[in-house]
Length: 288
Length: 264
Image 1: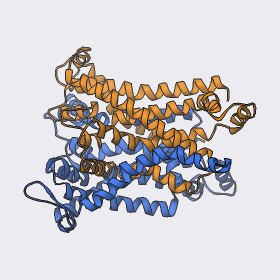
Image 2 (image 1 turned 60 degrees about the horizontal axis):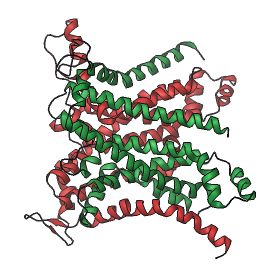
Image 3 (image 1 turned 90 degrees about the horizontal axis):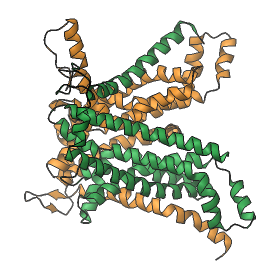
Image 4 (image 1 turned 90 degrees about the vertical axis):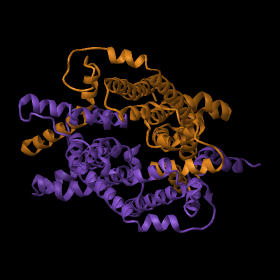
């Protein structure tokens, strides 16, 4: 074999274990559940192989599923909006701070590393019937009886914001950090007020980071089922909870496949639209 | 900068930091509460919940499972990730952007969907819920993170040093083990720690893949939450916080130390 041929083969040898893993453990399984979603779970519990549209008909036409899908998108949208509003000034502060930016970023990353389930359940300590907030209000004398503040849609959104905010701040920070501050100075020296130069120079230039953070918050928020189980009430189930119910509780795997694919199509469409207009590079910057 | 606007921004940022830290601080605080309820008021300072934790067999088992799973995930995922990153950074591969997207795909697909697809497909192949399924799942969704972290660091290693070694008569194997690998070590360790931490923390996929009776630390906490919030959960939370925060910090410190020593 020539040297060139060996050179050309080397990267493929290095890549093949990872590529085989992704194809076998992700791509083929995804194609498999597409096929599976057309099978039928019979009353005996066995799967009937074939081409049945029943699962899709149920998933797409049942009002129950549709309401929960829209509810899930709504929760994800509110979460993303709140993360953006809370996160932008914080990211701006870190990016333009004269103090130690590395420490500020590290402090932001710490809660990011803390276990998701711990951070989610920690809100029970704050808002629960015998939590910090109720104890405080009773000690001050505002209320006599503890109030149940948990287990509703607001606390689900609160938990999601707490979980996803670092993703948002990090992405905005990365794009703010890449802006040449001379541009703002130039705008200011040409007579723009600080507010004008922010609105017309800095904000537009940081939009890619805002979009990347927004996409992550939305997709991760819309795909969760743990937060509603821990912080939500019985009526706050999200779409991923339906998937979990179908697969783990009811063992109706063909229906679970169809529901999973519905979630994948809806959220995948967002990723594709994002990729079409902004490209994946921005997202990778924020993750790496 | 200065002025009212900047002060408002600073005030806002401080509130955001408080929002991020307060609930976690309360978990740590309550884990030292002497009261037998996992809530306020504080009745005294005590280590008793950590002692109870150390004597709780279910939690110790979960801890062992999580450690083994995290360790194996880190080893496999880092090996695959480092090899793939080397190929992508060091060679001109046709279709590199498509390959990158494919390798990143596990984090673009919602984890619930990935969990369902893997569970049903491996079940179809007669591989039931098992430790092997759990490991396969953890490897596939930590792989993109490892690749992103390792790639970012590999770019900064100059090829000149390797070429110098080769021109001085080192074989490609020698060059890899004596030059490239030591230079890459911080990246490899960072990738491994990242994979371990993500695996150790995972619950979304794990609840789908774990066999009955097997619990990892997060699923154990989740199961305990079904009853009520006990002081033991807060103590376990504190241990988890120390682990998941301490390990990456240690990783950063090691990486810094090694880069400094290497001087490159």
